[in-house]
Image (cartoon, rainbow, N blue to C red; front, top):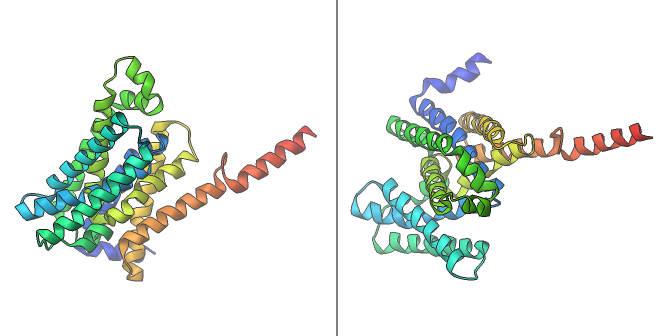
Length: 286
């Protein structure tokens, strides 16, 4: 058993991949928790696809593609907020418009600029190609975002559960929104090489949703979600190594499996345990 666990660690690429996977496993659920509670989970998918134009332009200009991705993500957040505030268009329609438009623009720019951007890696990730530099970058992003979440936790908590109330007491709700979108964009940038933009929304949502079924407080959701995210990433990497299959789908499917188990067996909200508890209370009354 010990040899089974230690064998993958003999390879540097696996050590790097596991390090990045654990960092992403912590970061994604923490940020995803805010999206889940605000019923904005699909916003993660929108932001993930909206970074493509920035990647294409940055690649063409030979600057850091992560800078381009960040700028493109923030611009898409601005556009969504502008559509919501200046028109009668609902938020789901605004997200759909930005999602399709930015993604189409990115594909067009890649063609026009004759970029040799690795679309497969962008869409589905390439965690086995992670280098030590990628580990350091991901660690810096993770630490920065988590520190900012801790610093502005009370303001974000108020904004998340009562945006109108937060605005009434003078909190800068627009800045909080853009700050949260910046955190989502950084999380997506950090996750691109791990699971790719197609699958990153699952890492943002699945562990946090599973935690939502287990605990009530927001900070507990973050902690439990982070634990599940780490388990999914590490377990997915081991499955990928021994089954010789892509790592991104393994991580996401394991994360989904943890969600299904929670959905069925959560002590308070599980589909199976809930009916059993209801029957027990009914018997006690009689």
